[in-house]
Figure 1 (cartoon, rainbow, N blue to C red):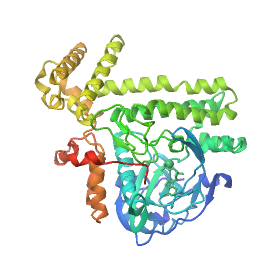
Figure 2: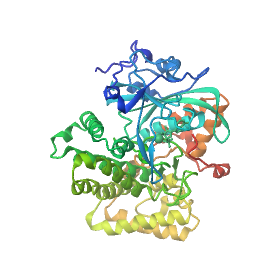
Figure 3: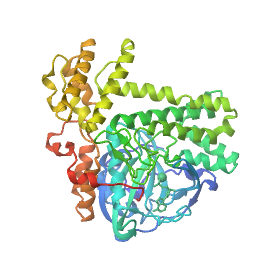
Figure 4: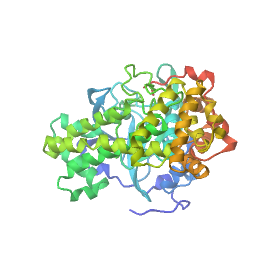
Length: 497
Ligand code: AMP
Ligand code: MG
């Protein structure tokens, strides 16, 4: 496997693909070809994602037939993988790639990257589905994958969106699209649950050994590599979810079949970014019980790790060892969350301030909730507060209805800043690197989607450019950092994709 320079004569059809997953026994997948997408057109390409696999955006754009699944790269061995999972807390049995197809992996500077079509037609795992994805959800997945990467949060990536006028039925008729997405691996918690629930310990071991050898080789040195594997996945999952909480990201469908074995944000559907803060916010209209609400995400992450732990129990061998690996979750989540919150407030972690800081954070969230304060604007504007006096408070204060309550909290915050002799300019600079100015608000995605449905793809491109640098001031794009307009309050996203 060699890494090659962007801009050389290599095109998507000549991608130097390996087919690592296809080297597993046939029980793990079905080989097949994508179903051609009629009269495809290019909607979007991510230049950084292209660069990662050694292609220029122009080379990607020139490969529309491949992006749409109408042709495969020469060395591709396309397949749909089988997996199972728990959906909304209930065992759902076999699921699998119902519309995604893996077509190989490329060696990159960041390690191997697998490429998948999503929405490329029927597979043996399509169940009642049509194997397609709609343009709406494809643009949302494309933009959010690249936005999360821009935010520095572990995620699958998106290379391209190809659209077609072919209609598919959802709540209404919509047009279809294919996303080419990338990740080192698309193996999920549910990939392991699949074999556990079928009492197939041999396959379970083959899959675990494959994932460990390829992605966690250092764990081979541990006394019980399978236990160490569970502990490491648990740790990564806890960290990923702490990152989500810190930017107000809600996944929407944290089923175990959507949980990456590498701790990556995976399978973007009815996700959302918190706007008016409400810890119980549910971003997925289909999730009526609120199982996957913002406040529930951390414990659901732990629950999902338990599902994985149960599936790995035959390999780990002992309940106690499995439990010990799962016990990694709470302290890892708490420590990461504490670290991220301190950074968001521009504070150094000081042991003697631990209790006071917790109280300061709790009071802050309570105040944000009582005043329905916009999550992203709050933290970005918090960087403008001065340690000495209230002269920098105004833009932040404007977000609150209850100004005296805000002033009381701001006084506590200022006292805390003074306790560590915080420098205003340095602190704001540091806070701006962790509190994004730009996130993919639902209404921004919606505007880009509606323009794209009318064949104007410029807004997708513009949004992509803005969201690739979410921490930078981009004064020419200030409107993308604004509060949502009134019409956006009627927007609903559901599992329909
Ligand atoms: P999701 O909740 O989108 O992660 O999907 C859950 C399961 O349903 C996965 O096995 C998907 O492959 C499958 N699925 C979702 N939408 C479709 C579709 N339109 N056609 C076929 N399978 C689908
Ligand atoms: Mg899924």
